[in-house]
Image (cartoon, rainbow, N blue to C red; front, side, top):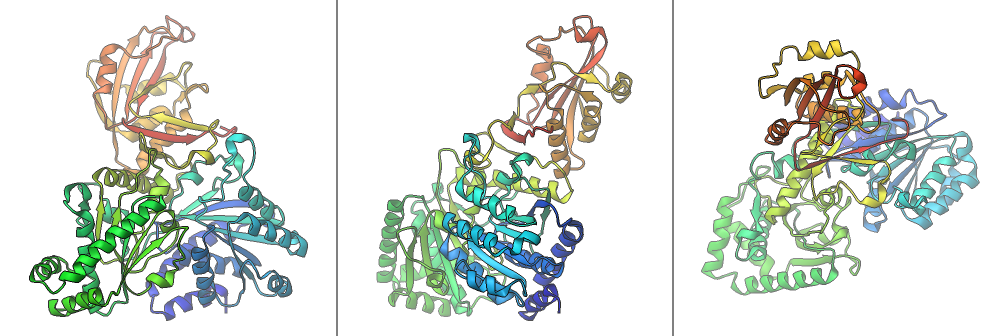
Length: 617
């Protein structure tokens, strides 16, 4: 039986037919487009993009199985340098994939003895020592000299990229990953992540920008960005910390009530996650605060006032995935949890030795910082307390901390306690994620990214400062030396628009068509603005912009401001749409002595649009 068929039967055998169907869809699309036509002489980079905690591992394993059926003999699965995550990954590989020689970082002899008789899977942490060791192993065995290598980089935007790109050097992990690829005759490097910002902002010349991108939709029952951070208003499960007298006590009381409801219904676990800071001292302080609240509730859990508070919350909560048991059963469980000291309060950071088994059952409160992000999963997570802030927040890092996303969350029991300004940041990140998804799904070749001012897409040390362009919304841009493809074509496009009319609301597609007839030197990157317009169309195919048309303008070339004061003010008054102002110059003051149309474009304000300029552009 083929590897893919065996894997899908394993998934279906667990009663998860829907997951098997989504994996089949992903594999069919990627295999037919990118694997079956692989030349077996190139080194290619691709992106498998899905929502955070939406089942990327299952999709990865499907792609591995399909690639093994097509003749790829060796697979490297790379995880972040996190022991818990690497253990989770190797356990999943051994449980799910049959017919492979499965190795961890210490199984070099097993890999050599297998001699590629079975396709080999090697699960490695992205750790300098480990990657150096396996670069040597792959080189010394000689297997890869005449064979293709398939690398699956889980959380590819973390650790893999060159953090010394602006110092004309290479960081160690990035260098060893390049060495591993070079040891093979050819390779496919599949980047897998829920936060592709840093990958999409790599240059093609770096070798780390994806040649192709594929987005897979989450299945039914997944709670993701649009549930928690909808485009309008705020999610029903959101409680603003700013508006609560004692938010930590409120959050703990919610967790306690939900624990009772879930455990009474036969569920295995209910978790509460507190993410206040990267600082370990802050984690300890929160631990003490939680223990204090817990101690107070232990002493009053039989009091009428306490029971009344629990009942009020119980009556407002309505699970959607199972039937809620009677209040008396729920209260009994809550009182047993409290009186028998069954609620664990765990600190999860570099100073602690907390494993996934510690919060796999019962009622738990987990407190931590960076350890809570990047692929570590928390089953039954129904309460989130998030206050972590940064002077210069990064969109991808914040989104990876969104451990509330997932399939086993119950929408009727979910609660997120968060500061109002942090909620706004998450909402902005979700809007851009949806934009990226729209562009990838529509096959946009040059995916564009935008964020509000003050919110960075990713960490600056992995972006090439010399190649990164930032277009500021609300700023007017026009070319110094434009050319018209043919002025007659532009005349025809603009013929219906009268000079005396202040402005027109038009389809963005018309703006795109006008731009296709303009040429310019490097001072005005037409390709960047065209790609940004494509991004708007991917989000809203019927999107609207504003067009201002003025003819017979006698403005000197090289003047500091192209627009007249009135037209500048008119454009500035429109803040939420693309504004394109077209000036037809008489040509009497420069401009080659001939009539020419000069565009001035202004993008929606308070946003920064990012682009990468390769030497080839």
